[in-house]
Length: 204
Image (cartoon, helix red, strand yellow):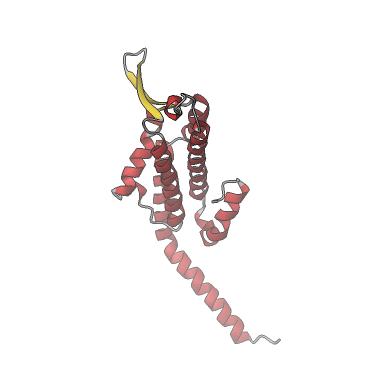
């Protein structure tokens, strides 16, 4: 197949035009992308990684959850409900960041439906510095049958852990999306699912 010189020139002209548009828009995209990264940093600071991963053992092993562990989720849920600036992503990967933030908060909402009276009882204790700390304490007696024998409490704990794991997986996907470089944006549709699978946090 013979390719004419005018066709080659037209192809190069098209490529150059696209490159020019990208170069023209890059300052705008870069600004929005950087603003979104600043917002993700604030969210990740508000909700540290170790706190997210500590939630599961608190629920299943300790069966005691400090109330302060829930506070950042409640704050972020309020910011989403009121559409505050700190969660309004607008850059080239905004939909991926927003999706994982909502997935995290949805799993948290499901968990909080379970961590309620009578299965979990709110309690407090006096600390050495004179302050009080508040926590949710698992109430095994809430599962007692008419003979006083606890039934299905392990299933309840398993459900709590499932939601905690969903929170941590969405949190990791949020971290991975936030690590996307601006130059990777054109490939993000395929790149992020690959990275999710590679880190074993793909959406189920």
